[in-house]
Image (cartoon, rainbow, N blue to C red):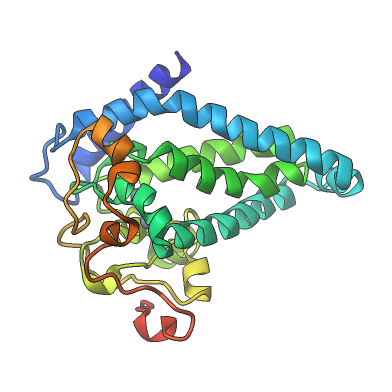
Length: 276
Ligand SMILES: [Zn+2]
Ligand SMILES: [Zn+2]
């Protein structure tokens, strides 16, 4: 029921917002394969929630035994220290997990499902394979639960994470000015989904774009937005086929994008396009 309420609230916020500030005004509300993403949102909620609960509960139990003093120390910090600390630590883990899902062919097969989106909107955020979501988000949550941040901070973090990940996929043309380095924007994440070769394996952060500046993977050309989104290999656009895709894809190498430029530390600076 909570899920249905959340979907309803997201729809009444984002559908009008995407009409008012449309990045692609010609894109229909019921854009291509929107029903597929609605199924992802409604059906995958349970396994993802169960998986994340299992990961975080285990992390909390282990941490309580190993670092009880650290946990009580962190819980005693003021909220304005705890919240930014939780966001930075979790996004650091998210960044590297996300980058690993792009780098390793066996992981890319799962993540390719998310990148199969060809029209971006608020609903696109839900098209994520549960294995991808549980591993990436679960890993990002481990420092938050293990270090014993207060319940209030964790609840605020969870809310921020959900709404921001919905927002950065939305079909809106909102630019953040100088804040674009501090907070992930639709502009920042749309480039992550771009088909353009120069944008591939860029903009991995979930919430904090300065991590991409720090690690040489930022791509945010001034005043431009991607022309198209998606991946090169064909993927059936229905829920069951996409859930089975990582298992049925002929082999991991085949599942990679055809002209995939894999990021290596040595060449990352030359591929980066840090905005001026
Ligand atoms: Zn990605
Ligand atoms: Zn995305």
